[in-house]
Image 1 (cartoon, rainbow, N blue to C red):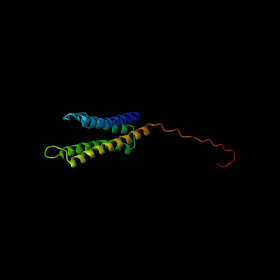
Image 2 (cartoon, rainbow, N blue to C red):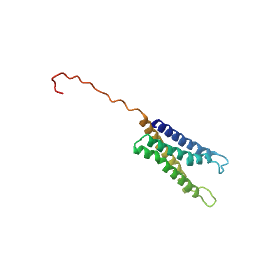
Image 3 (cartoon, rainbow, N blue to C red):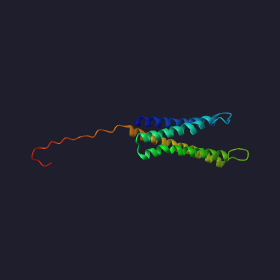
Image 4 (cartoon, helix red, strand yellow):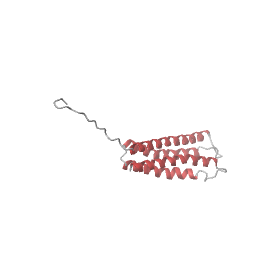
Length: 151
């Protein structure tokens, strides 16, 4: 189970990295229509949460420490924060639907939260890799004792 924990953690990190690519695709699509961020939305609202749940499941099955299991679950909360920030940024427009300084600031926080999520997933992957390493065999030391000498 520990190897599967590593693989699912790595897939989660790949999904988060691809999320930034999908955001760039949406930002640079011309003309920007409703579907410009479709890949970003599907990955962020479906793929990442499923991979996060699988990561938590395999962390528990691998008997990871509780702290690592909690860290593996944290991206779910960050995805909820992402959705709230996106909704707030989209809602903070002027009467004509144009960007406002407040909306742009909130959108910036959406990007910062994404960076935080990537750092969390990197740490989960590090923890999974460390957990999957075989423990070194305990070294035994042989001591020669002469008869009659105190031990």
